[in-house]
Image 1 (cartoon, rainbow, N blue to C red):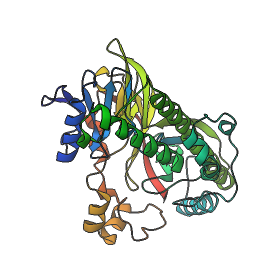
Image 2 (cartoon, helix red, strand yellow):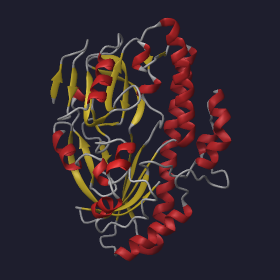
Image 3 (cartoon, rainbow, N blue to C red):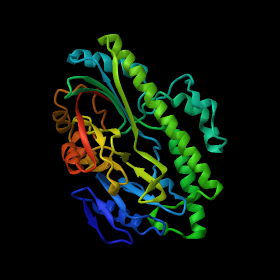
Length: 380
C-alpha cells in the first residue's frame, strides 16, 4: 500500500501504477465534502464513469452515489467446485456448446418468463415495475462484454465451474434513472462539482431511499441470475461427467452498503471491488486466458475490508481492438476452448493486467486458497 496525499483525504492505493484518468477520478472522490477517512484503490484499478473501477469510497451524512456503484448493479462471480478430477478437451467442448444452447448469451433473452421468488416481493418503485416483464425474460441470461461462464482446473485437483454476470438491463435502467435524478438535484444544491460526475442522493430523502431499495432488489436479481445460470451449467456438466457439487461460492462487486468502519456508520461504495472481511471467501477472476483465484479475506481496515474484483484492464475496449490482432489473441488462449472472437478482441488476455501480480500486490488484503486455470470459456 502507498499513500497519495494530494486531495482533501488521502488515497491508499494497492496499485503499483494508476493511470492518469483513474487517478483524477480518485482525487475527485477524495475531495468530496462527505467522503470519509480515505479513498482505497485496489490493484485492478482503472478509469470508469465518475468513479474508478477498483475503487472503494466511504461516505458520511447518509449520502449514496449511483455512479459510484455503476450501471451493472450486483455484477459478480459464482464458482462451483465439483468432485470431478479429470476432464478431456472434447468433454469441455461438448459441455460448453450444450450449455450455450440453453443459456442465452450477449443480448439474447429467454423466450418465456423465468420463475424466481423475488418476483413475488417487488418494490413499489416505478422503474422496477416498468422493467419487470423484461427482467423476467432476462433472468437466466449471461449478458455481453466481459461476462462469461467457464470450466476451470483447480490446483486443488478438482474441476470447477465459474459464472460472471450481473443484473442485466434492469440494473442499467435503475442506475441510469437515479443517476439522472441525482444530477438534477445536484444542479440545485451544487454539493458536488458537475465535472466530477458523482452526483449524490441523500438517504434522508425519498429519492435516496428509493435508489437504495431498487439497488438492493437488483443485487438479489443478479445473485439469482448467477445461481440459475450455474445451476443449468452444472446440469449439463453432470449429464456428461456424472458429477457432484462440493462447494458453491458467490460474491458481487458493484454495490453500496451501510457498514461500520473506524467506529462510524458509513455508506461503503465498492465499484469493482469485493468484500474481504476476515475469513470471508471470494473469487478474483483473471481474463479469458489466464488464471482466477479463490481467496480468503484478511480483514484489512485500510481497504475498508475490500480487495480487487479481477485483474483490471490495461487498455480500453476501443484501444484493445486497435492494437491486438486475432493472431496475438489466439496465441494467448493457447489450448483453451472458446468459440472465437467474432470481430471483438476487447476481452483478449493482453487487454488485462497480470493476474498473478494483482494477487501478489494485495497479500495484506487476501490469502489465495485455490488457483483456477481455464480449460474452456464461453464469453457473452
